[in-house]
Image 1 (cartoon, rainbow over the protein chains, first blue to last red):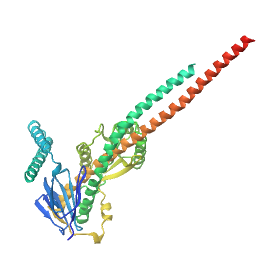
Image 2 (cartoon, chains in turn cyan, red; image 1 turned 180 degrees about the horizontal axis):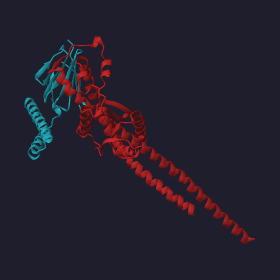
Image 3 (cartoon, rainbow over the protein chains, first blue to last red; image 1 turned 180 degrees about the vertical axis):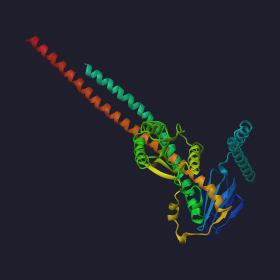
Image 4 (cartoon, rainbow over the protein chains, first blue to last red; image 1 turned 90 degrees about the vertical axis):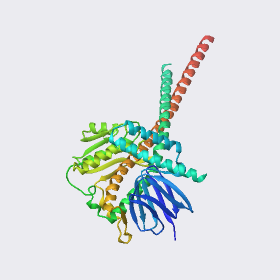
Length: 139
Length: 287
């Protein structure tokens, strides 16, 4: 069976454009795993980890909210606001982001600011988690 | 000789101007590189969203969505993306020519002017301005364009606007940018329909439901379409400015050479006439 063609695009850039054999994505109603030959699907994504198998090796991305489309031609398009590849996550940066977000949650009282800070806090925490885990597995 | 002195001062002026324009050219060049990269990088994203929306539109009845339905109340709105600063060559004149053309077709239309130049032009030509946004940052982010998106979407839903179109300079390459109209609202359901071919129809599953995804995706699409227009406009602006400044530097350089020639000629003339004086004087003395 032929593999899946995965494309991950974020606001800033196209992160992935590769043939993969399996994708696990954080859909709005729970995590889904996609194998070749999956039914055509359009779904919303929530903040979480997107894992795909490329040449038998797992790769992880931290993605924020967005959309995932599977077409009949085994083509998977992931559209997200932001996405960071696991290897590009900087632990220090994530920690700094956590601190900054916590700070602004404490200090600000505007609703929009709070929502934004909370979202970036969640993302930073998730990034830290993924970064720490990948460190452990390497050692 | 006074004319020689005048020419030297003009040479100096041309030299100073060329220094300034050269500096501006280099500043624009670096800004241009960044803006171009940003505009080109986000193109796949804009395309992917449009593709998904098309897929979705084939499967569910988009005509039912509020942002797709046409209504005849309210005004036509044109969002005009211009620059805050001048000296950008033919960027603004080309843009405003299209603006005037649009104005002729929609005499009742209102303008949302973005950039100081558009505001000044709209005031000067007595256009009806609905809103104005100036001093947009150079390194533009989605958050900077959200107020404009909210303004037009809300206005459309409240039936204050009949249609919303964005006019911006589409970035083709460094040397050419062309003005482009893009209708944002109502979303063009015909454009979606034309791509629909019966054989391509596949049964899509929707998670959670088509309606819910559409409700999320459509505003997302509009946000992104406006953001992309901004990126294109910025890339075009810096490219246009860089080219304009390059031309100005070259012209200043040319002027300098011309003036130098005039200066040398006049110097030569004065030397010749002095020599002539001396020879005639010695000749008269000897005789």
